Length: 230
Image (cartoon, rainbow, N blue to C red; front, top):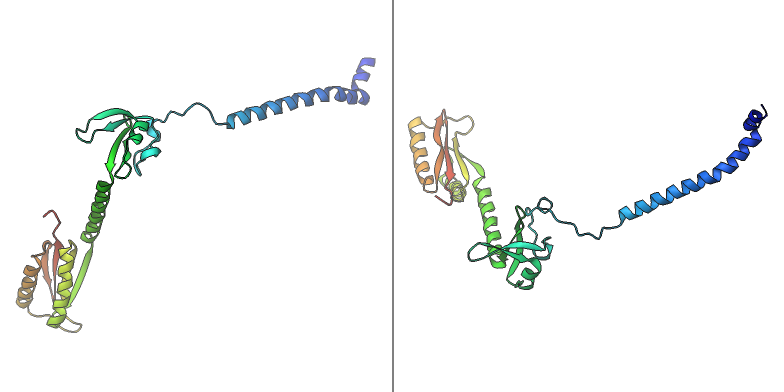
């Protein structure tokens, strides 16, 4: 009975806390110190070199060049035979004439392949790609030229000249004839003869992408410029 009273007395509980608390605090401090130590060690960079896997270094877009190629040993493309030769990047860069060439990573799978690229050839290739994009943009253009049957010959010829220029650049052009408001178009035979003459003059620069149309007082010719290959 006395023991139970002592165990449950406030004085004993306070004394117990005084005895236990320092030990608990010490243990907590030790755990906190260990956690900080482990955390700081995990943030430190590892001394072990990272092995660059093929999937981590995509060659496209923006192929790595010279010192930015992250491989110590690669396969070098022979410029004459096209065969692959084992080389170290340090050796390749040491023998590289940087005034005329640069080393470029071509692929990483199944192994890294490096090719020596002529700066002049690279510039020429970029210029050709630029011209091709420009040519495709012109070829993809689609313009419509509108005329009236009573248009003055000088105005008609001036617009036709622009249409021929667009066709000669590979563009797609629609030539549309229509009567003026509250006016009727010429007879069907006259429209066809006039349209046929214009059509033949434009076919020197391109081909029809859609048959000629005549409906009511309106008529249209559809010409596509020739591609550079044709």
